[in-house]
Length: 357
Ligand SMILES: Cc1cc2nc3c(=O)[nH]c(=O)nc-3n(C[C@H](O)[C@H](O)[C@H](O)COP(=O)(O)O)c2cc1C
Image (cartoon, rainbow, N blue to C red):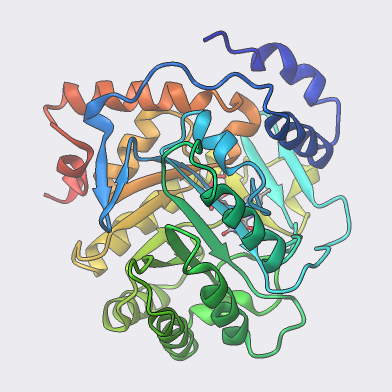
């Protein structure tokens, strides 16, 4: 398949990042983009939480906040797609500008603030696609957030779980976006125990034939105490996995002066090292007992492989697509398959946590 993105990119980059993102979504919704051609390499097939993944490379949350292009992204070659974050009620998010590129550094900075159409619109889209027998295969996750003005945060996650547990292949409790005041404090031991307990109770109350796994998505900016508390609460609560990580509030020196002072979360290449270090740490703290999803700065097969070796059963990316286009997923897949074979691994699962052995 010919990748047109390198030709389109200079044009796209003449628009501000949020307009460019809107254009990308419109192109994907139009159905005019060619689907990825080649099938998945069998070495990439994996099974996690009883779900089958044709490959372990997923689209991270935030690209498709309203579940509008889930199938289009599966057709681009992603092994799974995570839509959201969705909040119970629609909300506009922060004022613009709220999305910035650092092109040289392969980074993105955002303070979107959970702009989204709300739970009903999101659920209706998932209902529609489930009724479509021609939809592509691949797990679809729903990432849950809270409305800015909700006081008891757990209420919003419970509402999200109730509505989406029957519709999503997995659910994510996102308590790690830096752009909703107070959200990251939910990662503390006591609030987290309460929140996960209530979210898991809400899931159990759905009494579904197939219970979707419930994951917790964490920040990269955590103290040692936070990390051991999260690991302990995750294991005792019965949550099914962790996504490591969201964007960082840190500002590495390499980030251009103009962006240093912007409020928000940084993602892309500068996040790779820190997020992979937290991933490896969480793998150790949870004793390898919980499947982990590695996100943060993945832009190549080598990056995805490093996440897997550090302990990730699955990998996600978003920011690198801003610079490489959606066809990047095909390159990452091919490179990852080569690396697995080079090192004698018969499957992704065999390589998970290899650095710790
Ligand atoms: C513009 C933008 C919006 C995002 N929105 C969300 C979101 O709504 N919920 C969420 O859990 N993560 C969100 N993320 C974080 C990504 O899912 C991912 O965890 C992070 O960007 C690190 O991966 P990357 O370096 O490949 O982008 C967002 C990231 C970006 C760049």
